[in-house]
Image 1: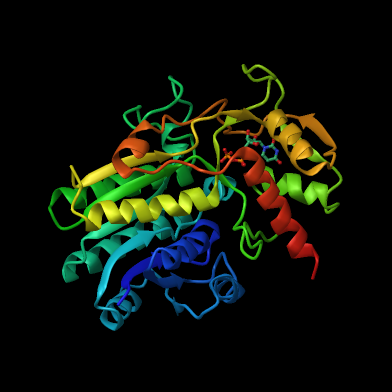
Image 2: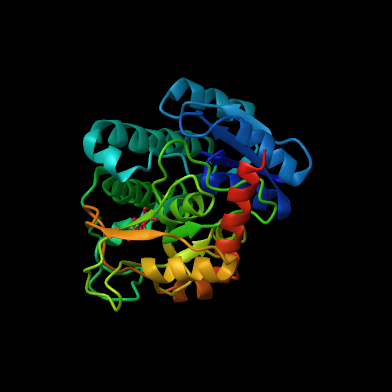
Length: 340
Ligand code: UDP
């Protein structure tokens, strides 16, 4: 029987792609979500991608009794991948308690259930936001932790600390994956970065401009200390990110962990500026993106890209998709969304 893996927040952007990849690699995801950020239709879309039904439970992770019921129903789970979290930086500044409560209590409740039932393997969805504006590039896992000033970033740092301390008791093993900037969509174009309302990330903004939903792209800041004045990020295909979770799980299941709490950067190691991304999109699709440089967005980090050596060596994982693949897949997804 396929090994069951709990996927919290499994209808979200990265969660849904990871659920698909888990099935591709012979695992059985138990997808849970409270539907606060993703609609139930994403479940149908996951099923369309893989051509069969999936296990889904609507669960509020902050409710201990709901979590207990879930673990009673699936006692044979062998691990969990924990994505469920609020993730809007600006909203977290306005509603810090909402972010601290949800992101931390869900993590604690998950660990309590896992510890109680002896389910040892946890993969955590972390972020390069924990490095803030790094002093040294590319940034490696041992760089100082100083999240950009937002409650959201702080919840990632604090969740890692909770996981590290719990792992130190011997109850669980944890791999924390620090994502750089996931973009793109599954090759099928059926799942991708669904968003309600205004997009929050660069690439959906570009594709929505390309399709005519927006008249122009606003580039936040042209006076940074970078070659063309715009911010630099390490963009990585969401399916590469999804795959890394399977490599992390296998490391745990094959007893290869060297420490109870391990951390890995997930990026390509290449930094691209916002202007380079616009040019690359234009070249990959032949569509011109009207843009305007506006004021800096508060809280933005000037430049960040990953040192990926550790993930390459210890997980045996390396990003496979090129920037053109990423941008074409994002565009394919946007077009499919609008073709209905
Ligand atoms: N960005 C932009 N216009 C937008 C959205 C984003 O210029 O409409 C810039 C943003 O300032 C940052 C980069 O694109 O420099 C990546 O932003 P995103 O929100 O995608 O990810 P972040 O790295 O901030 O989490």
